[in-house]
Amino acid sequence: MRITLPIALVLLTVVAALHAQETPEIDVPLLGENLIVNGSFELSPVGPVPPGEVPEGWSDEAYGADGQLTIVEDAAPAEGSKALQVTVTQQNPNSGIHGPFIEIDPTQAYIQFGWQKIDASSRGSNMPYGRQWFDADQQGADQEISRSYNYLAKPDVPPGEWGFTQQILLPDPTPDDGKFAANEIPANARYLKVWALAYNWHGIGYYDGLGLYRVDYASMARERILGAMDEADADAIRAEIEAALPNVPEGLELRTRATDLLAEQARISREAAQEQQRPVLDWMADETRTPEMLRELDALRWELKIEALLRAVG
Image 1 (spheres, one colour):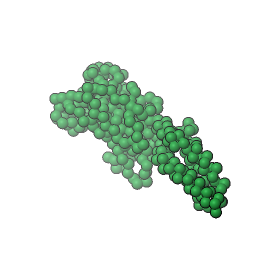
Image 2 (tube, one colour):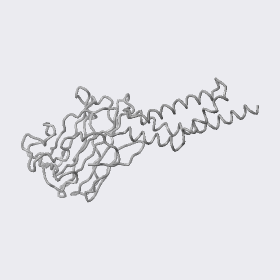
Image 3 (cartoon, one colour):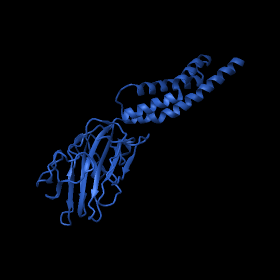
């Protein structure tokens, strides 16, 4: 399954409510395989999930009473034809599945997505799809357990229609404040568990096409940084600055600033051009800095020319 998503400098939660089961296209480049095993439930036989069991690839930590999970063929919108049906009643209002521990790198970016549907005859719904973060000891990533999990926003679609939700997960940029937003990965997280639940209501709901992928953020950032450098013709600006520098005395603030900016531009260009893995926050910092740095270089070019001209006539 190929997914596309509009690329922005800062990627936040994206919710797509798709009618008529349109397959979403995601432009975010993905790395590796789906980290959720059997996210489309195609590995499971059609019919009720046996008591005490869960679909293949999911954790034995079942949620709710037996007999509430069924694999159905329901014109599922994701790959294949199967989906997970979760039935909850007033007597047994909670059910669903948890995934096993999935190892993650808190310095990288991920995307979590999936399809959900509420049966047309159901009234109200509470079908939270999300994840819980765990530290290296597989304990909750936050001392207050309720803050160690987050849920994707539910698709805003009428009952009986499939809706698609997706969310980019980015490293926490302020790990020392003791907080992390819904789309941020806690700095101490090393694992997560996916949750696909039906909680505290009664009715029938469905899940399909659940995915968790590492995002190749480096390739997106590299393209944006190098593209900005090319558009501004940074090499030409740099050449003009380097040619003008000999006309500026050592120790002058203008010369020091020019030297520092040239070094910064060279570092960002070099690291963007190299095929290397860096923390996502480093890439984001360079993306944010590049346009401002290019404007400063352009202004500096003219300052140096004026300085050289004044010295020549003085």
